[in-house]
Image (cartoon, rainbow, N blue to C red; front, side, top):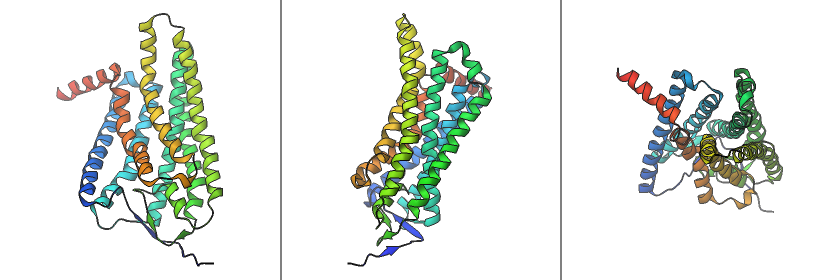
Length: 310
């Protein structure tokens, strides 16, 4: 039998999105712009919520928590992308790669749970408005966010540790722009079926369960909306959910495409784009999606602007 070279590298080489020089420059500019927009948009959202007493509600508390996750996504991944794209040294240490992979998985699971929590918040607000303040009290909201993060930490520990303990064959080149689980499974020279099954189970328990809870919440929401006789009234109620529904569709779609399938179907270019969507594009768009049609939020921004200018 041919000898297989197993490596336990202290570093990996991230191949990035492209090795063409002029494309690397373009990618660097695009990533830098996206990074700045992500940070400024999410920081602005958090500041506006903190400074406006009228926005101290469960919905905006959850939205601020989502902004923290989105900024963490960008800060974990984009700076390293910029460094590797502009530098000839595209290496990443084993420890740095492990931390990046761990935090990325924590944030992914936490965001899935938080989106389900936000759907539940809309369900209570629309379907049980008289009991909303009693159910969605401050302590309960804090517990929901804490549970979302806790699930993320546990899920990441279960998946990342066995992945990085795999023996890797020959080259330590990772055909990706950051340390994500699927390309590492392809690099392994042992059977990864157990880890794949673990990923499927984890996805079923966390992502699919959170998605199903979100769907159930929206089934009740739509049922309640249809009972409203006024078309204007229906539109007004549904508009409070439209932004969240759009974010849910994009986020869950990309996550499920990446993780709920065999790693043998991993297509490098296509999956890099999918990863880019939920790690860089979605965090950039979320604050704008939630605020662009929100008159209350835009009014708060205008009030803060006037206060600063005075």
